[in-house]
Amino acid sequence: MTEIDSIPPSLASSATSLSGPKYAHRLVVLVPELEWDFIPAIHRIWSLADRQHARVLLISLCKDSRQASSLRRALIILCAMLQDGRIPVETNVEIGTNWVAVVRRHYQTDDMIVCFAEQRAGLLQKPLSQILESNLMIPVYVVSGMYVPKPKSNLLAEVTVWLGSIGMIAGFSLLQVKIMQVSEGWLQTLWLILVVISEIWSICVWDSRFR
Image 1 (tube, helix red, strand yellow):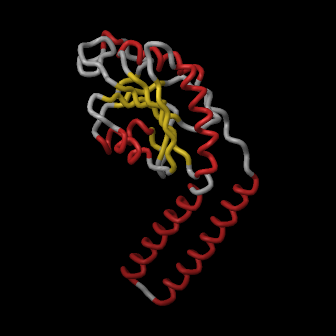
Image 2 (tube, rainbow, N blue to C red):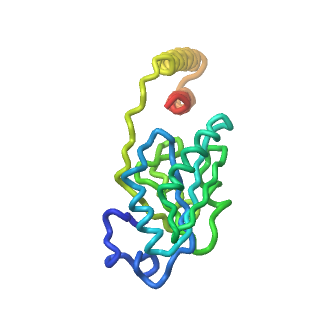
Image 3 (cartoon, rainbow, N blue to C red):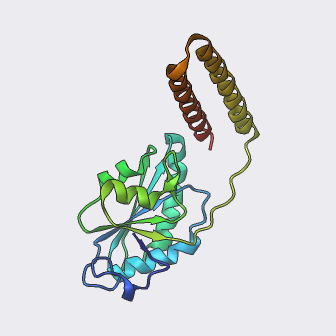
């Protein structure tokens, strides 16, 4: 992974150097949520495309078709900010939650994947760049410095999370009591360990659905 903002071109390897002999024929920029402020990163993306003499493909991912039209309008604005006589820009909106699958569908030889340092994905909310590199084995350029607003508080979601978690704890507690009544020794210990692991996993999955 190469940090555009922290590694000068002269220090990058010849395979990924911004000024080296190998150029990307296209930058595939993975655009995150609409409420993010892209202005600080636009110039760096434009500069990268200009140095590489590359076309730009802006891809965004939405959970359902209701968000697609809003995302398309946002990408058109970003397209207008990036496009000039030297840099052709295209846009694409996909429905789903799997960035790895999206990149795999669109990736072509000599493409350069560009994402933002603030982008995270998956159950563990790992950096998107790490997920792409480990799953696709391709280099990813990371642009940092984008403003991410604080998430708005959702009282209903918080209450739902707490009630669900309390219900799970109560249910698993009753199950543990039942296990202690009907088993003993190493078998009881084994069942209790499995129940505790299942309880923690269930609460984490439940919580992640509302974050």
